[in-house]
Amino acid sequence: MDNTTIIFGPPGTGKTTRLLRIVEEELERGTPPDRIGYFAFTRKASQEAVNRACSKFNVDRKQFSNFRTLHSLAYRSLKLDKTNVMKDEHYKDLESILQLRLTNPDSTINNYGAFVADDIYMQLINLAKVKNEPLLKIFHEFGHVPGGWLKLDYVDRAVKAYKKERNLFDYTDMLIEYNRQIPNPNLDVLIVDEAQDLSYIQWEMVKHMQSVVERVYIAGDDDQAIFKWSGAQPEFLINLSGKREILNQSYRVPIAVHGVASKLVNRIQNRVAKDYKPKTVSGFLEKHIHRFDSVNLKHGSWLLLGRTNYVAEQLVDELRSMGVYYEKFDNPSVSKKLVEAIRSWETLQKGDEINYNQVRNLYSYFKLDKDVARGHKGMAGVDEKKMFNIATLGVEHGLKVEQRTPWHYALSQVSETMKVYVLSLLRNNEEIDLKPRIKVSTIHGAKGGEADNVMLLTDLTKRVEEGYLINPDDERRVFYVGATRAKQSLHLVASQSNLEFSEIFR
Image (cartoon, rainbow, N blue to C red; front, top):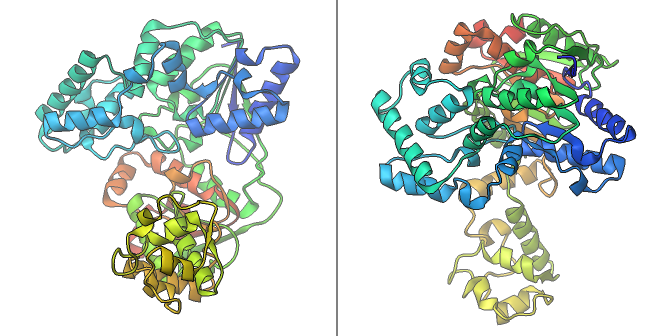
């Protein structure tokens, strides 16, 4: 369309920066902030965009009222409130009615917008809705479902009846209802980010706005479309008509990484060709067979990536056995509460004082009656500004543990496995008081992230191998995303048996 500019942003080419430049141009031409629609795939991405815009342009957040997700737009446009939204409690109610475990789709949307239901029934029901396809077709494509078609159809009908009776919507229902009513967005300019991840019903929303808005900018990268399994349809972006703009300079990907990534992505059959330059540093690429313990993880930031959660868990097991401090999905391997409890106990051992909140946290790791009488509940009415030493805690607040007792004996509510792990971290001089510099994730979970150093495990599960044989392009995109998270070095790890599928190795 004549009013549409399509911006293709390969990894690290500054796509968000380019979109914010468009926002700046609109403000300079006099477009009111609330007439600029900036729609991102996830809440996290939309919030990051509005925060950057407010900081850059010194505009109050409320003025950028249309910086949001498409789900949020539907919710507001339909004038829904919290009483209309399906919640965990409703799915618990359904569970008891159906005698079946169900997952709330809206509580299981991950950081990058992908639906990750634990139960197969809600997963397939949601997938049929976002793709606008019959549930029976989705059922046949998926394969085995416990109870077969009759069970899946029964659950689908029951969920629909429950929601209709109570006038309830999940997020996908909101999108469908929005498209039925086709409200006017009241925008002068439309910006859509991460368009390769949009589903059929989200594209329907975009196409309507595209037809009534004066200026449209749709940004994404079909090569990074890795959520097809949850309903994303990058073909819409690939086939979209309009002026095309390709950002051609990466500020993240070094030469060595760019080389292997290009070989991989150029094998994708259905794509928009994009030539982009790497940053002007050589970088480092190394390939490993079997194990990664030869890689020196002691310095720099690291992103350790597995194709599936099963593979990522194998990484976790290795790191724990090596005594390495890490985080997985934003959760550190040693909780902040435990680290604080250890440090609080060490402070008391030195004869120094700790505050009320530190005492409460510390007491949660003591065994009632054996280590402490009454626990922190016995401190009701205590001045929360008061400081406490070990003598005061013993005399006034029931502490029974002797001062000389090491933390791994004192904190009796900590599991033996965790004690052994933390002691190994301390022996290795791991800085457990700081945010871990090593992150473990699936490739999907790391989309949008980056690190100086990336280790990419190319092992596939049997199911992923089967999918690769049917449609290798999907896996090529996944590993392309994984490889291009690296800012300096990329380490590729594969088992001997898996080399057949490790295209990135070739």
